[in-house]
Image (cartoon, rainbow, N blue to C red; front, side, top):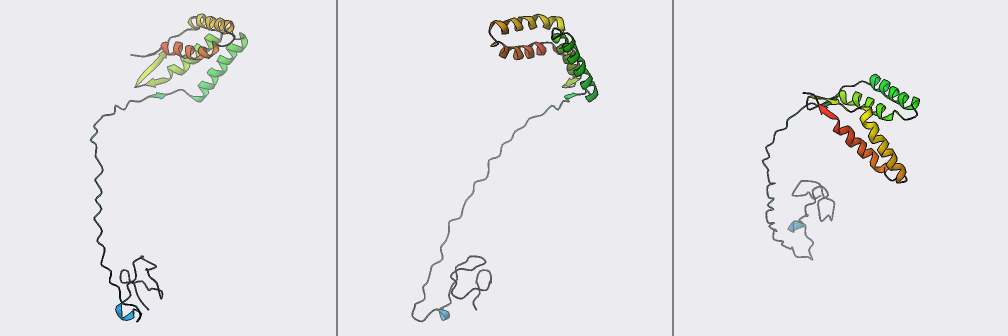
Length: 165
């Protein structure tokens, strides 16, 4: 029985490579078949593989960690949503601008951004003028202007949000 000269694993008869490490099996001269002359194979020298070092980057920056949060509660949110819905329902939608301002005041007053509490100073009366204009433009354009109403509404709301000092 022959053994691998590389790892010492027992080799099967006639194996040309080790089943464990994959090294080529060298047949000793005394075990070589009589009708074949021993073949000398010069060892192959492999060129060393040079792996370049990964580039390093020195990045210095500071992060100003500030706290942003919303401190409203679930129960308050549900009650305010129900109140706004009732305002819209009982006025057949006419008081929708006031309901929107009511909800925005609640939501924005509970927002703290960069450590500053936010306030909302828009009123239903201010929004009502825009609401009528947007409604008429939507009717005149057969509904096409309705695609612009939501972005205009967000823009109006954002223009009435301020940070407390």
